[in-house]
View 1 (cartoon, rainbow, N blue to C red):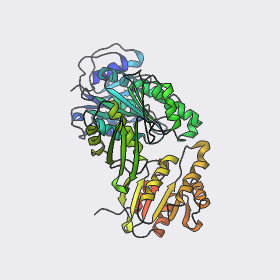
View 2 (cartoon, rainbow, N blue to C red):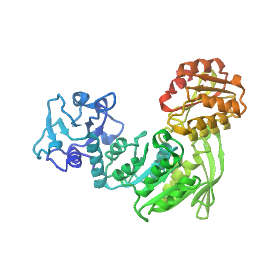
View 3 (tube, one colour):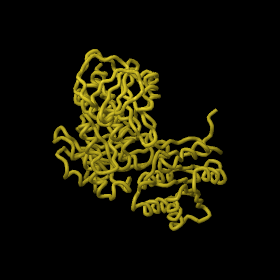
Amino acid sequence: MKQLTLVDLIEGISGWRPAGMETPVHPILDSRAAEPRREESRREESRPVFFAFKGENVDGHDYVADAFKRGAIAAVIERDVDVAADTLDVARSTPPQAFTTPLLIRVRNTLDALQNAARFWRQQLNPRVIGITGSVGKTTTKEVVTKVLASRYHVQRSTGSYNNEIGLPLTLLQLTDADAYIVLEMGMYVRGDIRMLAEIARPHVGIVTNVEPVHLSRAGSIENITLAKRELVESLPPAPEGVAILNYDDRRVQAMAESTQARVFFYGLSPQADLWADEVETQGLEGIRLRLHYAGEQLYVKVPLLGRHSAHTVLRAAAAGLTEGLDWQDIVDGLHAPGPQLRLVAVQGLQDSLVLDDTYNSSQASALAALNLLKTMEGRKIAVLGDMLELGDYEEAGHLKVGCRTANIVAELITVGERARFIAQGAELCGLPRNRIHETPDCETAIAVLRGILQPQDIILVKGSRAMRMEQIVMAISKEVP
């Protein structure tokens, strides 16, 4: 099996190919990750290469010695470090010669070096690349698309939310020649971000989920977000090699069909889409059931995804399968295959309550989707909702809309944070009694309030932006497993 070696990495960074450095490697950003890993058999024989990035609070150059002590074979640096090791000075165009490891690879810019290596390695192996972007649903879509394609092919995917200028190159460097596909999540803050990621990854297929006012404070406007997401389909190769899988139900995404040379494949809940669904039924924690329509065929499927909004996730994954030549049996097998835990998790809570842990992040669209799921559950319902960050000018309106939605769903509402006061206002304006609304400044206070109002067999939704650290609330009210 062909996988990244140290000589490949050096060639990708510098254009040189020093002899005698064929050791398989994998890149890391944290010196502690240089400890031996066994989650993948193909990693057991590879050695770590430490990329030293300088962040706002931590400088990776200070941990190069630690990385070497833990087993790293090389470190990519952009300034001097006090470590006894051979140095390959790419920054000064040192000619190739014999080197020993551990090796310091000196470059002008660590990020540029990582991205250049990823470009090189992607071109060496040339798998079929699927890029996924959108305001909400990227990670879940990535996981389900991967499961569908994996029913027939060997598939690599970005882990976690490795969706930026660092995470995407790291994912590409994990490729081996066994991987027929790689599925990449592509995030953005401003225009140009996705174009840059696409230039590195060179996707053949682009999937766009939706356009919502997420990261609005950085992007500046919903129009800028639309233009930024559109960069993915603009970067695709012409048909038939390129395929743009677009959400017909989102008018901004639908319009992207005019901006690509790729084949356009629409999905949605409208019969005008190439692949569409109806009879969507949510069955609580059992998942959803829906009927799919494609090319005159109809197919009923039940999928273990939570909430009505997951119908679009099913459609995206099925669309990827169909455009890549899979049959319905492959697609259905993939939709039912076990895989990594998705974002919303149901856990047992105190007093036999059920906690819906959706604390990974929050936006208006994802909060409304979580509330819609909560509405389908049987029992007394409590929502614990925190600040939704980076909504920009839409901050007040977005929080008010979420608050209004809670009014006919929950028995009790607890808000956490300064911005969440608008959620409380929206709930009161839409009819939730004031004595059922509890505004709190932080997670600690929210935990105290929640414990005071909790009743047996309550269902509690906990959701907020990542920076709110609302997982503390879930931990505080979760039932300990003996």
